[in-house]
Image (cartoon, rainbow, N blue to C red; front, side, top):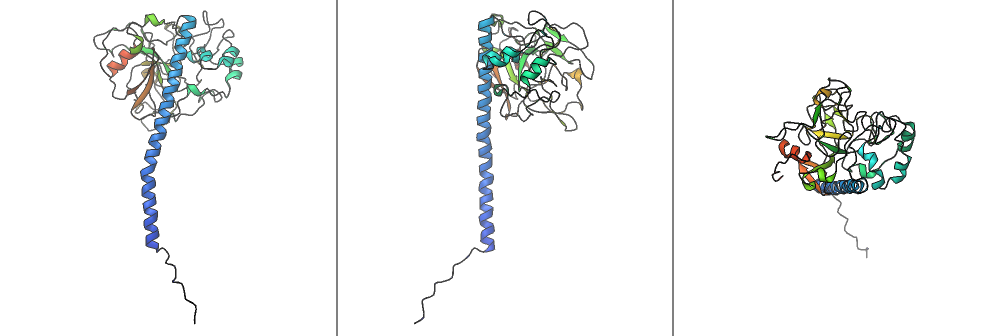
Length: 338
């Protein structure tokens, strides 16, 4: 009697295999956007946490010094003894973001503390301060000019250009009215916010209320020119997070750049359509425009921390009038819902 034969196994046909592959591809296609959305939500939440820490650092600085730090400054008294290109607010809050050791190494008296000071360049070379970086930002970590110095994604709010707030004239704005090329700073530089050149604003000076006044927001995306070229133009310019200014008050000189600060002039995420190569007369350029728009790669807007420490997401639809009112510390206007 012959042994019983097993029926042959039936293999997948080519068509069945292609169908299975197509189903898997569809499922992956459906899953990836959800994964990306979750990932961005986590990054946006971490960005908000960073800003929360920066807002707390400003308040702790104020508790100790009775003023907020200068937005940017020269090393001349009272911030140092060397003159030249001083440091930004990001340097002054170092002790309050767990960077006391770096702050203690900083030299404010040798001059150019935020630029070419040899001691400080050695101290911050290659250093990454995570709280100064937004995890959603697509910008390189290091400055395009000083490649060993970190570029921050957060920018101090100097104030607003005149004309943004209806029926209100702002006189504390200096218009450097520079040329098209480097290095004038270009458009208006406000002194009506809380972090500007040589500033020493007290919380009691914020007459509009600390919950209605922005302190810090974002520069986390590329600026795109009319040819579609992408440019790493941020408030840090070519020199990174520590760069300040060489003049605490506008003095009519041709160089009135106020690094790591911005004066609101343009809409949130207005990052396309800028002149090729930059045009500093509009306040948006490589080195460095005073009016680089608030921007991020978060979907639909930017995060901002207010002077009371709360963090709020500002959408792209926020009008320039409202944005100007939020940037001005004492314009006295009633801010509508935003």
